[in-house]
Image 1 (cartoon, rainbow, N blue to C red):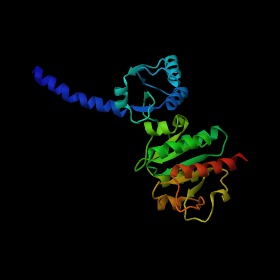
Image 2 (cartoon, one colour; image 1 turned 90 degrees about the vertical axis):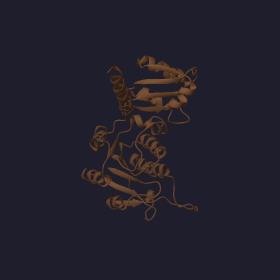
Image 3 (spheres, rainbow, N blue to C red; image 1 turned 180 degrees about the horizontal axis):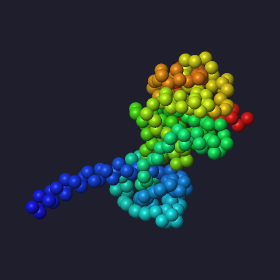
Image 4 (cartoon, one colour; image 1 turned 90 degrees about the horizontal axis):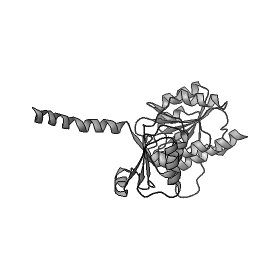
Length: 266
């Protein structure tokens, strides 16, 4: 009977470990972890490479001790195995999974700041590096929030956090089932929706981007879906003079976002 009971317990253990992993995520890289610490968000534990006691690692250790966060030193081999990114810079923070918000939360943030809503809608960005770069640009430009789809698109993970240089900690992100339904919701709240499409005739700098605004950035390869394109109030394009007729999604997003910011500051 004892052997049988032991076998049953052993079979249950992997399931428990798997469940625990579902409810944790990682933030990697010194800048990203410092931003995380400064944001005041929950951190379960911070791992640092044994012997790493120079530069900004010292700042991370001091901040973690001040917040009474558990610090664990591991040798480089163990850290390499744990890391999800090659260049994790000797530090990994274990955190609860990213908390997505609702569209109402994004609109309420703009209202609290007494600003016209400025929202970014990502129609199927698949590369987490692009998502991280877009979040970083959006945060610096005063975007109130980002909407991403639940399916066939990158979600917030450790790579996104690192590429965003910690900006993800300050950005409201709503993860929705249907992008076109979300666009309609934004329209009901008074936002004008601007799509980006190379086939249109209007350049982004010729379009009025002031007031309540949502900017749509399409998929890296196929751009916006037809349904999303039809949902837009107007379309803009970026001029192209070279033989390559498309830009990286995060670069396109940055160009249009900053034009909107420039106009909104006047």
